[in-house]
Amino acid sequence: MFDRLKRLAGDPARQEIAALFAHDPERAATFSVTHDGMLFDYSKTRIDAEARAALVDLAESHEVAARRDAMFAGQAINETEGRAVLHTALRNLAGDPVLIEGRDVMPGVLETLARMEDFADAVRGGRFTGQDGAITDVVNIGIGGSHLGPEMATRALSPCHDGPRCHFVSNVDGADIHDTLKGLDPARTLVIVASKSFTTAETMTNAATAREWMAQSVADPAAQFVAVSSALERTGAFGIPPERVFGFEDWVGGRYSLWGPIGLPLMIAIGPADFRAFLGGGADMDAHFRDAPLDVNMPVLLALCGIWHHQVCGYPTRAVLPYDQRLARLPAYLQQLEMESNGKRVTMAGAPLENGSGPVVWGEPGTNGQHAFYQLIHQGTQVVPCEFMLAATGHEPHLAHHQRMLVANCLAQSEALMRGRPMAEAREMMRAAGATGKELERLAAHRVFPGNRPSTTLLYDRLTPRRLGQIIALYEHRVFVEGVVLGINSFDQWGVELGKALASEIEPILAGEADGAEKDGSTRALIAQVKASGG
Ligand code: F6P
Image 1 (cartoon, rainbow, N blue to C red):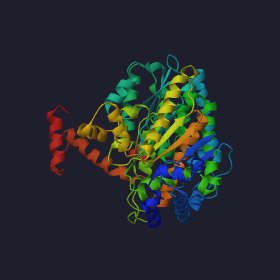
Image 2: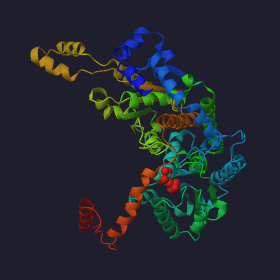
Image 3: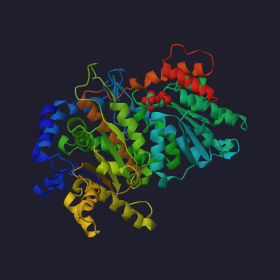
């Protein structure tokens, strides 16, 4: 299957993206898919009808539809941990039964959602207070999946904010919590300790520091702490009573957990109604993913474009480029979602992957990236498939001219990547500027753009809670489809464990409680230098 795709990708007939448009005037329509007002345009890639058919065959041959149905049906598709994968249940607002081994999880999901809503309303309405009055600031302490989603989404939906200010602390670097707490009033601050396991060292260290900070001026600091976790016994040991613990079960992976209690800071910021709209967007994308045929299925096509570019064409990375400033943290969020999910080396059965893992994912919002790394994207020697995201309109009608510039820039970038600037055109420019002879040749060479660089564009009207829910669910399902095709379990993350274990060995060496003689020469020398530098 991959051999066939590689042959197609190497075929001279489909080398030039621009030529595909010349041969097919309808290409923009036939190589894009719409859903509920969103457009995913993949026409500026080298995928043609034959390649698309081969990619869809690939998805079919890996039984993507059957795996998808198994996921929604609550089967233990996370085989290395023996767990179901049911973050989709968290946005199943209709409450249709979702069974794990015959037990319907929906009553518990909806009960927790109702508790979150009560609590969020109480905080927002001033019924839940700090020692000195209504809560003005919420500090979410978590890391990875217990941080990136809520931070990203809270920023994305800032036009909907009408609750207390939300802050996010993740790094164990003391600078993070220090700078966040500085200036906050402990007597009017709520701390959410978000950790699925409630053992993550960074989060537990930050939570203890926050408690000490609060205890300096608040008589009962625990009363202003909330826990979000699936380890309820540990939250009790930390001193947070069960009525302020919001639990979720092990069938929700950390990086898929924004839809449940991990989304509490978002709900407090935007209110339960908008949070439900966000869930509704996710549920809508679930329905599309389940129902649409593979060749018009947005998450499937997004995944197949990813596989085409990385596995088939061999491009090592992909850039996510939101032309929507409020999605500034989306690239970081997607780095965890995609790279923690599909950054694996063996198949579900433990055999080496035949077609490699997922690619490196990176990005920044436009237009900022244009003034930073787009130089390499346009003229560097490696091809970076670009995934543009674009909101047609903003939330600031009085700044419509900004939005027009933003949109024009996004569209210009994908056009420039595809068409490039040939040498003849560059020479003409230099000639017009008065250059001649060898100097003209030299200067023109720097102004050549190879072009023929692929990009996709996800275009939507405006970043509302529902749209954000659709977009995040779209990417979740994209990761799932890529994982199925590559034979990866997208729902474990054993690769983060070794570093954690070694950090806990090095800490006592830094503290002078162990000598570290067993460490390699470089690590010993670095430790010595840290100590010599006052560490
Ligand atoms: O980085 C590993 C990881 O386990 C992530 O998968 C997870 O999102 C993060 O740590 C935080 O874990 P927890 O929510 O258990 O604190």
